[in-house]
Length: 561
Image 1 (cartoon, rainbow, N blue to C red):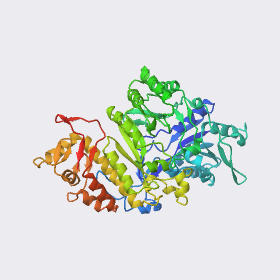
Image 2 (tube, rainbow, N blue to C red; image 1 turned 180 degrees about the vertical axis):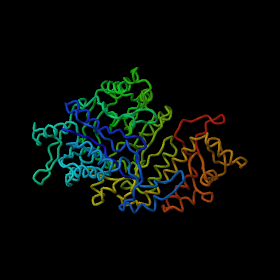
Image 3 (tube, rainbow, N blue to C red; image 1 turned 90 degrees about the vertical axis):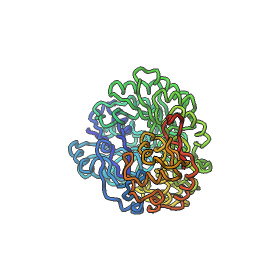
Image 4 (cartoon, rainbow, N blue to C red; image 1 turned 30 degrees about the vertical axis):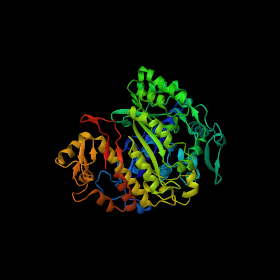
């Protein structure tokens, strides 16, 4: 029996810049080999191929006025792209391998069509192939796949043991009814076997990377992989469907065994960066502290880097944990604040708050973490003024602002309230689909662009060396209250200068006749939002993101406009 497991390509306006290690696929690959199925291969059709532009989908026609050609440093996305292998390349692999079973990872509702296209390719080219789909989206909406002619089985929740037992059923050793978490078609009807969660997730570790090509999975020149400390999340935030996959249950690994696996991966496969996949990384502060101490004490892990792309729950952070995280190898921290509006957070069942962030913020600055704080635009009960308040709050903090436009997927509370009837393909942040009554697509795209400007200003604050170029160009200008790390100019002049220069710091910017206000005015944005933002900006002290440096004998960390 020949099996291939695949991570499919995706199509969108943007994708991650790093190579996305297909962790869920690797866990199943490792477990199958451990259980005696050696004829298994992994094909990553997303990360191991280049991207290319494709036609703008008709469903996204409402975005044409926003996604236009723009060479400014705060431009939005320029084109719709296919990230990963071309469809004909995938078909060639299927014909070459001629597998009996193809397992497809489907992590995001947004890209379910690409999963179905992979499945349809397989069914057209291979007469007797069985197609199995698993991941987050199939766990919440198995009928979306089994309603097609291309998918035979869906695995919900934990996938390792159900996939293994499904193979046993193909060998005639157990009936399909004994395969937990499995959905399939029988007599024209869809059957859902009961879901069982694996209590001992340690049985899937350490992952087996033998036989896999790892050369593309790098950040800079350092090899990285994902790793898990736990599975699940105890909360039921209104915009998240994770509880439908794991039922709100948390399962944990031994801190020492996680470190043992990291040591093994570093010694055997030269891994330097470990990225936690956990949805709620620090459930037990005691156990997480133990883990960090083991990492610090390990001679084999000296010089590694740790990160948590999915974010870290800030309500679990304190001064001691942050110090240990820094010593263990964390440099970047992703935090989801969502909003500064307390009523919104309560309505969304979100445990975060401004008060919690204020408690940990001084330590984040002291330890020089590169911190990204994520906001969600378009929440129920808010309007654009609430979003601007959140943006201005973070403008004054030494953090990068991570904007995300609200979208809903099956299994979430907001999907039940707002999204039924909206095509699933539109349920992605980049389409700015309107879900709540107080926002329009124009509002959301305006707020997204304003956040690009806010982060650009933060980079100006950080970039003193590059600003020497600006300083030379504005010598002799009388002093004003506009300060960028020692560079002084009258109000608004420096921003106008930046946006009227042909080239600066490697960015192509606007033509000489364009100024900042004119830049926004010629866009199809909500000008009321723009004017409100630019007016308030004049009295705000902006902080950068990087560590404060000594400039001309004193600390200068802000831009005054």
